[in-house]
Length: 338
Image (cartoon, rainbow, N blue to C red; front, side, top):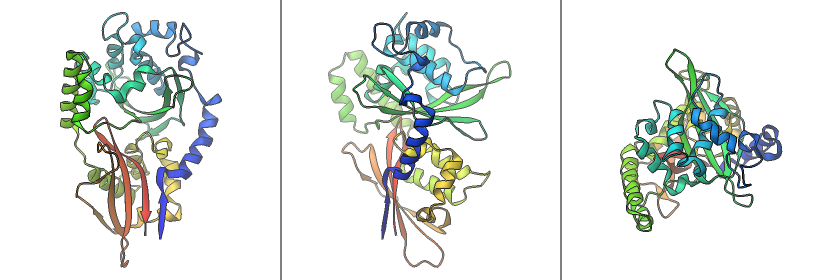
């Protein structure tokens, strides 16, 4: 018997209800402004001017940090009033543990030249998709947002992960740890090289440098991610309550509806009978062969894990779909086959 739960349909329904509750009208214009000067959308004149003095602060809440960084990354502010100004402001708000914080200003700007980061640069409207989720006893914050480039364009999901860091002066403040954009990374160097041919030499060189860094930073394989999540869910309250759910949420992609759940909400979902095997298995085997590619470029794959309880003769197959985002494999959905 097969039980398929692709894209976590039940979670999607639940999150639609929550989204309507937390986002009046379904959209949030950054800073609650209707549009930027000139009617083009994006940051307003006031928001853009405020970037010159924008700094991390204990008074800023996660959504305020996200709004500031989004305004800084917008193409309107990338090179105004001087070259790479927007990147400079955005880097002020990066967590020290973020790999991007270790890059030069030039390298950070290189990241933004990639096709899959275009939504961060070209957005016209922004909305919050779901509530802010706190993990690790309030040390981390996860927020899903949607952006689009025009009133008729499709919404693109962006997942923000923030961390509380100890700043100079002994106070804590929210900083950006990671940003995952809905569109998976391309894993084919040929695609990047072909795109580079149409760009100026400096931009083409930037793509090449970025590609080499991405491959060097990629560590966990799809099988590694699946095993890590499966083992965390098997002992969900070790080393502290809801830890397993926190791990699972951390490895959700922007397109996974579970990424918008709190650990408590994720735990309730696991109590559904068809997911019982996820917390009851006694044997686990994760296939270590090359996972099956869903997309031609290999940025979306299927990874199987076999589980069974003690005494069971047959195995249950848990098939995970994963996609690559900023060099990290994240889970999109799963299918359980008994």
